[in-house]
Length: 196
Image 1 (spheres, helix red, strand yellow):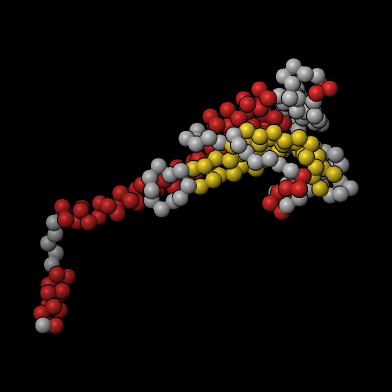
Image 2 (cartoon, one colour):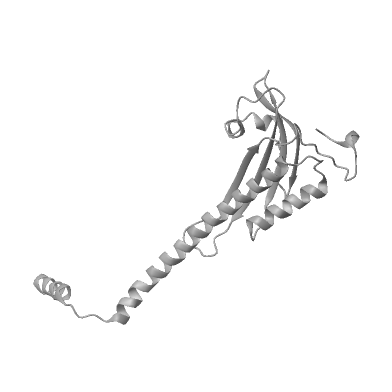
């Protein structure tokens, strides 16, 4: 009996005849899965790249701003962030102005505004390693820093083993043309309603 099994296996291994349709049925699901997997992974990197580019573009815009940031301006930045990321899911966005306190060797929040359900930023959070290690050191005392943060959720269009992923954007930049960027909650308000 064992000899018959061995000879059947040897005949099967030596047989060079094949049927293309059988091989296609065996290989096609694997090829389809590999193709869809490559598409999903490429698409996820594209989504992450768009999120980063949107954050850098907005940070550059704000760094050149010489007027107040108002609620309408912030809403426009949020809409721009959503359009540039081209995401199917709502994005989250937060714009903060930080001040370097050289005496205490830490950042202090001047103002922070958020859109899309982004979490609030606190001074305590700025001292955590997650923030402190990502912000630059050695700024002059009272120097301002713009911090643009964005969050997007990437959900793969096909299930190939990649779960939904959250992409975070964290972009600190210094103002270019002025020493401070001011928040004014009143659209046509003057300096008395602004936070600088």
